[in-house]
Length: 219
Image (cartoon, rainbow, N blue to C red; front, side):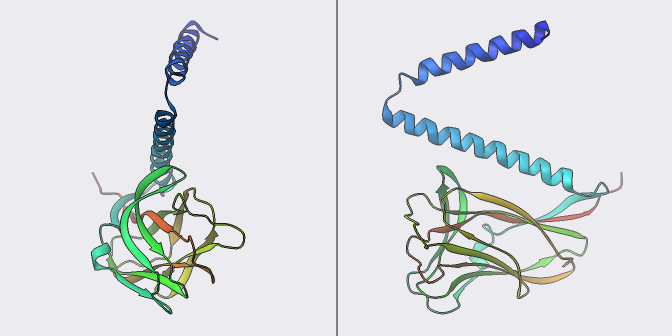
């Protein structure tokens, strides 16, 4: 190990030792708040890394030229259910999953059927690569046990392009490629289903966005 590496290691160790001493003096309430803040910092790192990964994964001759935020566009969305709307709850609000809080689309499914949040939007003709980035979770405090699970589905123009079944409260993050849909209107639906038992199905979609890539502008 070089001298500079040794100094960096010693500095880091001193910082960690100092933090441990200060943490040991905290009461239980402060420890809980610290744990939540550490989870938040970890989420920030993951989000930043995902942004870098998205950029690195883009074709070398493409750039991010268009973005659609589903949370911002929520006032124009259509809310529906495939069967009953009993006990269905759909709104935009902060949501904590695994003690990590972020803005989200709440979509608690109804007693029977699927909760649908539908968006109609136009994709610019200049977009030739389209991706969707989002997270799914069950909010903290939900008592999901046994066979009680929640299904998450994404439909585009009536075709299911993605789905998963979830029971845990931690966020799971995804980036999926969409077919070429540029130059016209598309219909995107977010669906959640309690699969026959909607108790504690506190389903949330974390910061869903469409990312459109196109030719890099010429300099």
